[in-house]
Structure formats: C-alpha cells, structure tokens
Length: 291
Length: 161
Ligand SMILES: Cc1cc2nc3c(=O)[nH]c(=O)nc-3n(C[C@H](O)[C@H](O)[C@H](O)COP(=O)(O)OP(=O)(O)OC[C@H]3O[C@@H](n4cnc5c(N)ncnc54)[C@H](O)[C@@H]3O)c2cc1C
Ligand code: FES
Ligand code: FES
Image (cartoon, rainbow over all chains, first blue to last red; front, side, top):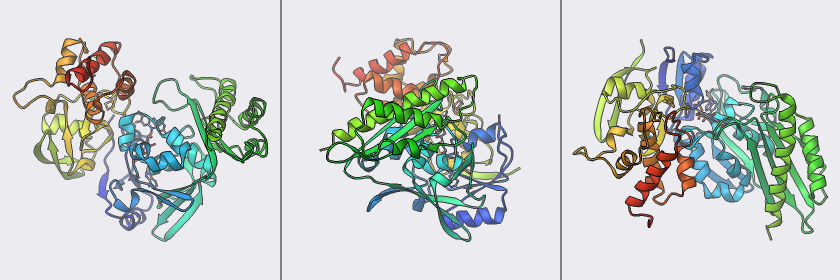
C-alpha cells in the first residue's frame, strides 16, 4: 500500500495554490491535513500527478467572529476548533460534533476545509455545515465565489466544487438568544464513521415556545440532508415529547439509507428517528437553561 | 522518480536527505533515518502503531509524506528515554504493569500516552481511554495499558495515590 508517483509543490499563499491548480489542468489535487487523501492514495483510489500542499498557509487559518457570523479558515485544524472557546460559546452545534471526527490524532492534522471538500455522507462537519446553512467561500484563478453548503453536495464524495477551486473559508451563522443544540451519532466503534448522525438547533421565545429550528441528518442518504419540513413542524410550539417524536419521524422519512454489513436500511431509518429525537431533546434542554 | 530534499529534527538531532516524494514519514523514519522503533501496521491511519509527535502533537506518521514534514520536529519512541538510555517513568510503568505482549502497538501507545500526560498532567481514566482509543492492540486487552498510564501518572507526582 504505497502511493503512486507524484510531483509535490508547497503553495505559499491562496493565489499561489490556485495558480498551481489552474496550470495543472485537472491533474492536481490539494492536500491539507492529508487524513483522507493519503489513505486514498495509499490504496491507489487517488493518483494525482501533482500534490499542491496548502498546509500552513497563514491566510487559511483562524477562527473569528464578525457580527452574527463565525468565520473559520478552511485550513484550520479540527483540534483547534475542538479547543476553541469561541466555537464553544457561539456555535455549540459545531463544538458538540467535532469530537466525533475520527480520533484525537486525526483531528491534530485534519482540517475543516478538507472534511467539507471531501464530502463523505457520514462525515460530521459537512452535516453541521448543511444543518446550519453555512456559506463556503471559494477561490479560483478566475476570482472569488461563494456557495451555500446546502447546494454543495451532489452525492457521496461528489460536490459542485470545480477541480481548479479552493475552499478558503466556512462562514457559520451565529444564533443569539435562548438557543440550544444537540448532536448524536451511532458508530460501531469509537472514532469510526457514523451509521447515522443527527444534528439539531433550536431557539425558544420568552414563553418557551420554539421560534426557529434546524434539523440535519447524516449517513442515511447520499449526502447530508437538511430536514426543513420536519423543523417547521416545531415552530411556534412547545417542544414536548410528542412533538419531538413527530419531527423525528418526519426527518427519518426523508432518508434513503443503504443496507450493508453494518446494518439494514430499515435499521438505519429507525436509528435516525431515535438520534434526531435525542438531538432535539438536548437542544430544547440547553435552550431552556438560557435565562 | 520525483525526489525532494527534506530537513527534519528527529529526537532533537537534525537530519536531512533527498527522498522520493511518495515516501511516507514512517517509511522515511525507518528506512532513511534508520530509527525502526516506530512501527508500521495498516498504512491507512486506523491502527496507530506509527504514532509520532510532530512539533509535540501526536499524529499518524503513515498519513503524511516525508516532504510534508520538511522543517518540522519529530519525536519517535526512541526519543522518550533519557539520553543515557534510562527508561522514562511511563516506559517503566509499561514494563511493570505488563502493558505489552508482542510489542507491536507499544511505540504508538507510548507516544499517545506521553502526549496525553504532557497536555494533561492529571488525566482521569476516561481521559486515558479516550487518548488511547485510536491505538489498536491485538494482545493485551488494553486493561494493563490503562493501568500503566495510571501508574506513571501517579509516579510523576501530579495525582496523590
Ligand atoms: C482513522 C480515520 C478515522 C476517521 N474518522 C472520521 C470520522 O469519524 N468522521 C469524519 O468526518 N472524518 C473522519 N476521518 C477523515 C478525517 O476527518 C479527515 O481529516 C478529513 O476528512 C479531511 O481533512 P484533511 O484536512 O485531512 O483533508 P485532506 O485529506 O488533505 O483532503 C481531503 C480532500 O479535500 C480536498 N481539500 C482539502 N482542503 C481543501 C480546500 N481548502 N479546498 C478544496 N478542497 C480541499 C483534497 O483535495 C482532498 O480531495 C477519518 C480519517 C481517518 C484516517
Ligand atoms: S500504520 Fe499508521 S495508523 Fe496504522
Ligand atoms: S502488545 Fe501486541 S498488539 Fe499490543
């Protein structure tokens, strides 16, 4: 299991990286943390002629709050997000999800941009981005662009990102007020990809009724999915067990799980409903604790 | 063949060489630097046998090409003992608690446990298990490994017995 031959170039800036990608005309691949790409290359599932290393480009790194948005540079390590007080305070859903990504050693190298660009349907960070409706900022040699995470995923490991583009930043909306979040997944072993995962975030009004809510499901369809209709059931109402169960089954009905050696489609669909209910319960409990 | 110059600091000593770009860091350490303490198991990131410290942080050295590590400092299992060869308290505790049988996972376990204690001098049993969860052992059943880390932690004086 050794990677095939490739040429290697370290990009010193975003401009440098997109110029290298443009010159390679589809034969190059970006490498950030390498925690997905190196195994794919070892198994010869990927054989890029040129690796463009974007690890350590300063402008791709960092976490900052600007108004009601949390801006995270695409090259920011998952371990840094996990330890960030700003993320823990402002985007609790991300803080809850990030510890489920692989193991500590994987998160010490893996980046948020690499996980979002790769687009594994069971990956936690794409699920959070889709659930919250994050905006992905991109760059090509032709200029800057942006796309909603909800329009980004086409299928397993398939996105709308052109081969010559780089994701530079992930912008996550910050909700203020009586906000709570919940994240639950089931995986066969600690650190494995999830059989199914559920993310939820709610905001309550002064009387404890749901003002707005988002629900997302991962691992149970070809892409992570935002369950807008299920979330709408909650609006204006008190989040009791009956309502939560109704929203959870509405969310599970949207899934198209596959059967494999880890579990049948029917099992995954039922699991999804259980996980969504747990995530919603956690979110409601957390929001009620906010004065 | 694509080759490139790489400079590393390995266990405090500078090393440089010209290596194939496709050479992983673990193969570079074993075959070029000549330090065979770091083991290579799965070559795709799941077993942890190849764990090393990269600028102090534990990482999988099979999930990195050596060229990516250019300019960085690496600590391997050979770097954990004192310069005179005396075992570290953690290594001693592994010996005492029988935290190894075949020894294949041991370099990775030591690196992962060393990094845990460096970051968190008073880890709970839960912290220990979490820090080692990415390192597989086919022999011990893990219990003695957790015992060894707990013993080392106590000996290092941070937690009363
Ligand atoms: C043992 C193991 C367990 C894992 N478990 C999980 C898990 O439970 N959940 C999970 O989500 N992931 C898991 N992963 C994957 C891990 O989270 C990766 O870190 C992450 O998916 C990719 O991030 P990276 O920076 O390492 O990307 P890389 O491997 O460097 O790149 C991945 C892909 O993204 C592209 N890319 C990278 N950065 C950018 C960018 N800025 N713009 C555009 N394209 C880019 C690359 O070209 C490549 O195609 C696991 C990995 C391992 C080895
Ligand atoms: S050899 Fe690196 S994780 Fe198994
Ligand atoms: S001692 Fe044999 S694999 Fe751990």
